Image (cartoon, rainbow, N blue to C red; front, top):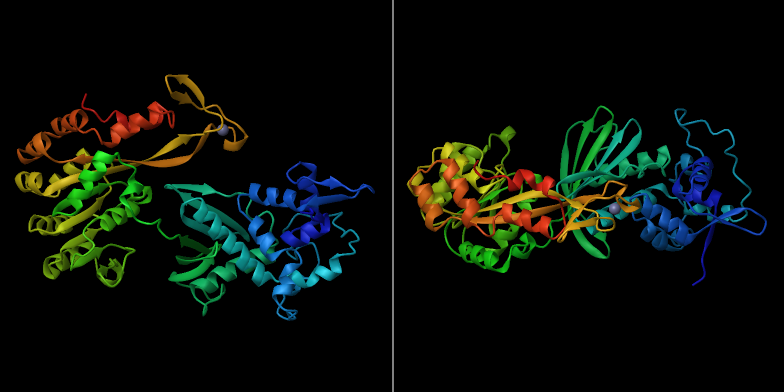
Length: 494
Ligand SMILES: [Zn+2]
């Protein structure tokens, strides 16, 4: 395969940036250049792709797909009269607030004229957005956030609950490209709105082909003082109990419980994958249940079999009002995103008590916390001990960088820091899941209204699949350190 070469001018044009910026990247070594025999700098295609990947967004695919010259082929020679003037081959953006570029003269570039027709900002904005989506899905991101801030574009991915900045996303782009990307996202959200007329929050589903797969996503946009802010919700990963990474025994027991009735509580923050866990459990539950009622802001599932009741306080549909629906609809299975108030808790509890399977979320982050919460909501000890089947516990835990961590004792490790982790020694977070089964002595303690301390002590002693044990296992295999999971592990009565 022959390597393609790009001139600095072509690179600037391709990325919609200035020659100055390109020269700066070459000077500081961010962008590797090769010197031609006459001394002029050239950038190889692979160096360019490396550079783009390093910027936090996989534009490599965009480049190979769109190519520097291939776009015009795909367009079958059509003229592009709508191309804004800002995208004509002038290397600097029109905005005065950008830094001065004294020596930004375009170097003579013989190939440039034949390539001009490739600059189609709308097409490129769509490609850049698709590349961002593809990158987000590849990284397992839950959401992508793109916000306009003082004319710049801020890109963040939420991965395993943690929001990660992609600080270099926008340095490649001209102001015109930034506007084009924002306009493109807004068009996805609502084709009838423009940035100038966007006045209310919008939310809509849309479908794009990402990595040659039709993918449904949801985009929400809100107008802010600085410009629109977009959050794109990525599709959930295929729901399956395997996603919870429980040991085989715990998984089998939970699976059996999901075929029966009773209350199963998921104790984790929404951003710590609670929705995904509830989705996975629902998938493992009896899929043939005649009446499934899902209550919460959203629930992704088969619309033919699930009655989804979105909670919307503005429209008068609160969780509490939704609780009435549980009572009157007589569902076999209830999915309740959040046990938010005593009335909902009671309704969910009653349904579980009367033979429905209820999967409910709570913000408590441990089983004992969830039990205390249910007690505080007025659920009586005796029925609680009989109806509560299990509490699934989840927490996001920082993970050591695999490339530089150092073994200290047995197989436990400590952080060091390398280029790949930005010198921090840490690389992202992972969601740890545990499950506490309410049976035997624990069920008895709940039924007899034992003190919280005693319940916590019983969980610590007798629950091999709990989150605390999962955290200990993660430390033992060198995936994280004891101090990072101290909050979870020290949940033992003093
Ligand atoms: Zn590292």
